[in-house]
Image 1 (cartoon, helix red, strand yellow):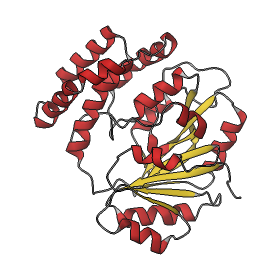
Image 2 (cartoon, rainbow, N blue to C red):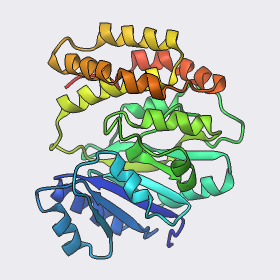
Image 3 (tube, one colour):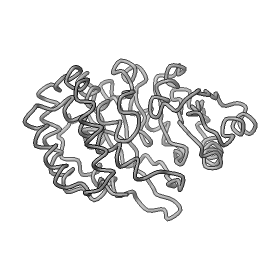
Length: 298
């Protein structure tokens, strides 16, 4: 079954062997989707290896590391109505892309579909899945799964036009929790986001990652998102909660310092989400505060 409705976009940097494994898995899918790889200025021969082993894949070689914006660059080349993201250490299960496309075909106000994440090699569910499955946000009766306030870029299929209209991933946030801002902007545009339990993506976490830097960016981006889209009282409450609960170390200090340095542009670009979207975000606050999958550790 050829899947001509969905293009898979993968961003990568200096993970040659893991990327090649992912591309091999994607190449085995019965849907045979088109794949675009954005190489964020790798220095380990990643681009050359892709060109050699997968000459049929569209390869975009960036001159510098754009982080999540590398996905935006790839989406400019997408001609299919839907785009499926995955990382260089994750791959879609057979049939998942077709099922997601069927759901998006059926429900015209559905903007994104997030899949169940299986962590390899153990074959266990990622802890975040339980939160997605039990999302407290009420959705319309037609929604094929729980309504979400955000999504996971490495496990989600989106409408290409909706992604473009919302502006894609912010170059300000770069990487690390970059989905939250885009998700709220999609919701403000009238799109619903959902989790669907019978879609699966596999994730074998890369060992080549700087967890401390990712934590710094995650805290910083949470603060920026909060002040960009949440009401002032809510933003202040969230800021104080983070200040009380994040580890008291250099990474957290750097995160708050970078967040403060960005305050001028944050206030300049601040646009509070519509009341109906803010109401959904408020419903998520307790889950986020108690989350075992969103700890700022590392």
